[in-house]
Image (cartoon, rainbow, N blue to C red; front, top):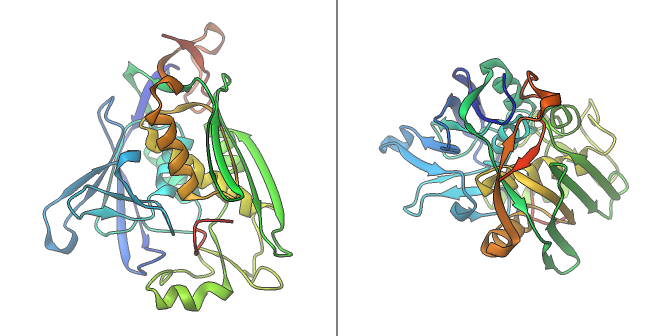
Length: 318
């Protein structure tokens, strides 16, 4: 393997599950893709319609209230895209196709780990083209009341810093920060599950959401604690899941970010707003390519080096 190159999957791999909001079964297949193609969703045979393609791009986001929803502008949509996008970016996959036979990406266990396991099963291979990054050149910040999100320069790679605050004894105020690479992502982020409050269930069901939510895919929080018999996977699993979501949402830049993202009481809406604000300001970013430092030659892309040359089930807040 050579560092500094774009990557794709070695082979094809499929997972099956249900949509967390629809409750309907769906099959998803990850496949290799050409260099410089990014991530492309393909809706195949849905409702008897011809295949529809939706590129994973921040400009194609159509909703962020309960999940990140992508659309093609002509009615086709892919809902709850953030976990598979997070796994692809976290594992260092640049180019892939994501084919599904439903409207919603399967929730699986509520985390990105099953997608990471599928990616590892398929394998990751280098391509010939150099990997390109979007390098943040100056701070960009978005606020929404007490909530905010910002991107700032950071030359050591891609860093995510999140902080949440809930008036709840099982959550309270939590903060977590991590430099994202395939090792740290899978160890510290990928297993964090989505979470929801029991008090919101009836309202969500009544609105047609969270129909597939269960203990198998959601950390369920009551007024007194966590209902899941197995408890939490991390002591601060809630805030780590916010990191997971941010990695997926920010992957919609179309190339890996070189910068640090920070949010307080953020969510999909804040993530998308910050990324959109960055990309709208052409003086705030530039494109750079990754080169292979001599000290890292021969190492696998699961240990990347950067050498630079030219859902929460409710409103998206915490």
